[in-house]
Every structure is written in C-alpha cells, then in structure tokens.
Length: 331
Image (cartoon, rainbow, N blue to C red):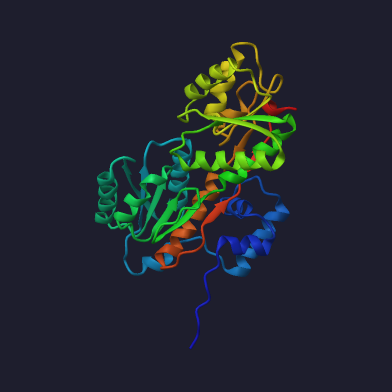
C-alpha cells in the first residue's frame, strides 16, 4: 500500500532554499525586491519540492464551494484593513473568492449571526480577524468549523489554526533600538486589543532585562488624536528622551503635540512607531517604524486554511517583523 507524501508547504521551500518565508512569498508574487540569484534558488526549491501554493485543487473535483468566509470583529483598524486587503488578493490568486461578514465585539449574537450567514452561503472555511481576546468564547460558541484565527497573544481555539505577526519581537526590536537613550516612554494602544498588550508586555520585559528606565501610558485608542492628547499630557511632566508608540498614528499625533512647542523627533527626542503605514516615510521628520508584511501574512493564512480544510491543525504561525530606521529615531 502506497502512502501519499505530505504536500510541501512554504516553510519547506524556505528551508531548502535557505531564505526567509518573506522571500519565498515575494518570489511567488513576482515582487521585484528579490536578487536574481536568490529568485533562482527559490524557484529551484519550488520545483524540487513540487510546491503548489493552491488550496483549490483538492476540492474543485468534488464540486464544493470555492468561497472562503472572512469575519471581522470590531472596528477595522489599520492592521485589520491591511490583512483583509491582502487576503482578497491572495485568495483570488488561488482561484477562490471571499465572502465577508462583520460583527460587533460586544454582541455575541452578531458573531453567531455572521458565522450562520457564511455557513448559509456554503463557504468551505472561515478566516476570523479579531483584536479583542474577550470575544473568543463567543467565537467558540458559534461553532466556527475549519478555519484560521488571526490574533496575537498565543491564543488557541478549537478547530481554528492561528496565524499572526510576532508583535512582541517587533516591540523588542524597537526598544533595543532606543535603548541607548537610557529611558523610554511607551505610548500604548487600547488594552482591550491583543496587539497592544503583546507590544506593551514585550516593551516592559525588554526594558527590565536591559536595565532601561521605562514608563508607559495607554492612549485608549489607535488614532492620531489620542497620541496628540497624550503628547500634550507628557509635556507637562517633561519630555522623555525616547518614545516607542504602539502604532504610527499614535506616533504622528504625539510628534505633532511636541512640535507645537518646538520639540522635534530625531533632534530633541527619538521616536519609533509600529505598522510602517505608507505615510510614515513622508511625514517630517520621516518616522522609524516596525514593518509587517501583509502579503506574506495572507499567504500564510491561505496555507493554514489548506491544512484546516484537510482536517489538520498545525502549530500557530508567528511571522517576523522588520525595524525600519528613519529620521525620527536618529541618535
């Protein structure tokens, strides 16, 4: 009796080619930012492993639905919007289509209704994008079936694979970059968001292990106005030499408050944000930030979906982030 070989995954290609998952993703997407020699090595590994980034083949012959459900729970902040946009492109490239539904964080019935709607549409699997871990019991009660959960914090949920960025690693990289300042103030995001909690905990731990004087305060929201208001509050207490903001909008708002009294990031204090939003490179001064590759995230979600549809449930996938240094954190 023959045993069918396990289908190669993107991580297998990366290991054989000696490159990162991000590089494999870029080759698959024909991204120009890959050296020719590296591209050749990845393509050789793809051929050798017979890697096919396609979740549709095993189900097309059975006539099953080609639709994937996506549920967003809570307000669509930058990370959730970027994830959804990248998913649309990635799922479509795999010969499938997205059906979406939204739900409220504080309404268990709306979460159940969202799953019910998608089941009624015949989706074969569901991607759930959420930031607030308090809703996880509601998701579990909705009997989600096969799918992928996009959330940080090491959470797990029966039947769902987990894919997310390593927010803690990004926060540690930002903190290490600012460590020479000796003292860092962290503008934290809303503490009902797992991303904000992950970044805060990593910041605190890195400061403790590095002997860095650390302060933090939650802005209560992810927007620039909240960062601005917190910046005004900090001015009354004295400007810390370095600031790590939990996202770029908070960083931009904070910098605006200090600029109004003549304090400039990169000259009078150092500043790093998170997310590397498109405008980060064009504000004045340009903003240092932690970049997340949403194209790679989408590819990993699609790959995890393939496993979920097959009845497998792999270990949580944590994707690397990258520190982008610009004028605002000049030492």
